[in-house]
Amino acid sequence: MRKENRSHLTRFITVCVLILIFVVVLSALRGMDHFFFGSIAATDKFSERLPDTVRQRDALEQKRWPSGFRLHRYWWVGGAAVYVAEMDRSATNLEFDIELANDQIIGRETITDATRRLMKRDILPLAGVNGSFGIRGDSYGRGGMTFNLHIQDGELVSIPIARDRWGYSPPSPWGETSFGVTPDGEFLLDSVQLNGKLRIDGSQDTLSIDAINQICDSTAPVVLYTPRFGHRTLTRRAYEFILEKLELPLTGKYTSRFVVVGTNRRGDSTIPRNGVVLAMEQRTARHWLKIITASATGTLEIALTPKKWQQVQRGVGGNLRLVRDGEVEPELVAFGRSRGQSAYAHRNGASRHPRSALGFNDDKLFLIAIDGRHPGYSMGMTLYDMGRFFSELGIKHAINFDGGSSSTLWALGKVVNSPAHGYERRIFNVAMIRAKER
Image 1 (spheres, rainbow, N blue to C red):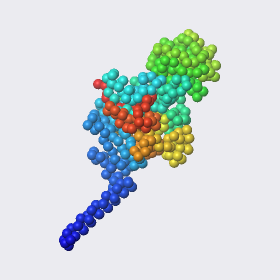
Image 2 (cartoon, helix red, strand yellow):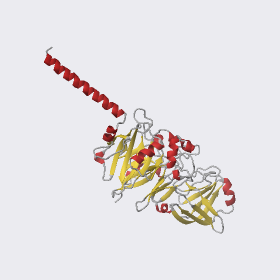
Image 3 (cartoon, one colour):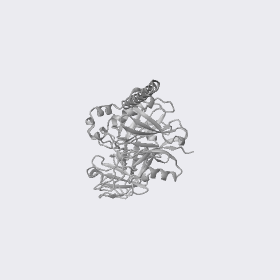
Image 4 (spheres, helix red, strand yellow):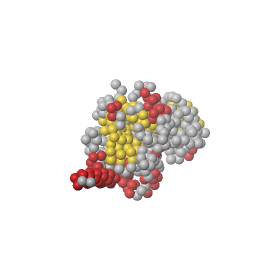
């Protein structure tokens, strides 16, 4: 071979080796989340700087975005796909809303079916995420009953008593987990108290109402059941009083007269369409049996606190607060460091699972679903992972919704994430972004 040809061949081989080395080094740096790739992955075509913990951000269905709406998928460096629907709070064409599955407490419904039902009423949902926790089924037939607060079109549909157990909001700062919107557009995130009182004419005693459309037992001995619950109360061994001639629906600031039209010492009463059922656990009822008699009259009062909640038209509860004022909730930090031991009732949150959440800052509302239980694609997040990641994204306040196989984000006509079981699960209620009625 001529010397000149050998020289060309040597240069060609050298160039190929250098290219191969460059590719290998590039791949190694990408796998190590090198700062160079962090800076590239953290910016998309909109040139918006994102955290180094984001490998990549994908704009989904971008051509179909209405003004003020965005839909993204974030690839978190810890190994999770995070789907986020965003709404500009200043958008005049969009608003937050909440929808109860099947339009009543008992029973569940997929987000897809709920949105189809809404569209038949000329309501246009743009995105929705599964919201509250609840019972999927039990021997009493209470499947579909949410554990959390639900306010829809101003009606106080459901409100529990605080309990420090999974699915409920514990009585602590970490448990300030109901999200609501006031008529003037203010976003609230608080621990909401019922403050319900019932008085019978001629009696000096006042009966405190513990919950609305929840389980009546020793932890919540006095519960009101409205037509929104379903056909019957589904209680066992409760003393019940049927109240009619009162104003419906119940609201966050409420006063109405009523008449007792019937009593039932066996429980599981039929709920009248134009009334409510007052259920009492047996020990509590002993004192009231001689006071609340058939044909008795009285007054029912409700005054939610904090006071701003008395005017809330749309509200939904989760179970734990994740972010407060842009920082991870202090109790969540301790929870993460102790791997769930600091709040044993919520230890599920210390493991990686699919998750759903709602967050907001001064400019935007975020509906979020995190895929999990998919090896090689997305393994999910712990609650602490969520709080830290949301804070990095600029979310100022956030709460945890029901997750696991229920974790679903529906947007622009279809489910956009990959639910853990491979299909869309029926859920209790939907937190959504919708087109504003004109």
